[in-house]
Image 1 (cartoon, rainbow, N blue to C red):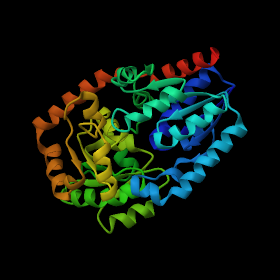
Image 2 (cartoon, one colour):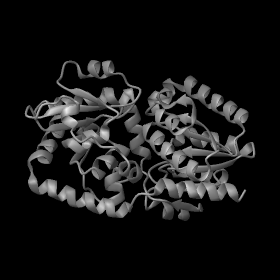
Image 3 (spheres, rainbow, N blue to C red):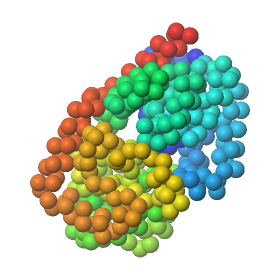
Length: 370
């Protein structure tokens, strides 16, 4: 049995890796070839393209890097044709994957989508591609199953795989000692994984963090980004980087400034008080504001369908506003309790662990039925 997987970012690498491990329990002899990262490789996939080569964010950035993107598309098509898999599994990354899906179907290869594109947020018209070219849709957010049903697509909700990742994560017993930190409380900064977004947001976060001299500032370094890059962006401001231990960092931090995306949900599930910060290029943001159809950018707020964690978007993403909100996160006891109560509600809404195993079982049954 041969399976080809395509993930284009760090969160996709994590969830695809857990999916591979769960599937191998059902089919130990399965062969995996993939676009992804180190975690998928460690899980047993042959990774032919690392996601750090695919990190283009925003409309303007995509236009500038169009030749590279088109080259990647052609390479992917050629590689799938040569590998001749029984099934191609797309992991989020819709701008790329929804361009590959029609090609895969034209070869007569079955398709599945795990971690569905957030079409409910923007570009809902892409659901036509899902209807025409995806044979099995697996979603991880509780409201997605009904949304797809309304658009003529049968989807299967399996729960969120982050709960799997957290359940088996080997947390350090003494994080501060392991990193030779002092006894000051920790303020965590999660500026994203792509260079473009780190350059835009990290200086603002660091400027806000500099107000809290009683805290030590730790930045979660993204896989594929060198420490020298963070030093360059920090421009002399006090900070340290933590690599491959973001969960440990969040578990030990007193508060966190987090860019939008999966990290907002990870932070909440680890019970760390957070604010959400987003800033894009002017052109990308102007276009995106016309297209995005959701009330919130944080997954925490979207799942709860209310504003729990404060969001600071574009012009509101300033050092002064982030600092003022961080002050509340650190020192307003009632506010911290309100967040903690909301986080417990979020956990109950998502349910327990087991999403990866349920997704693997769906894929296994689908393949058996072919």
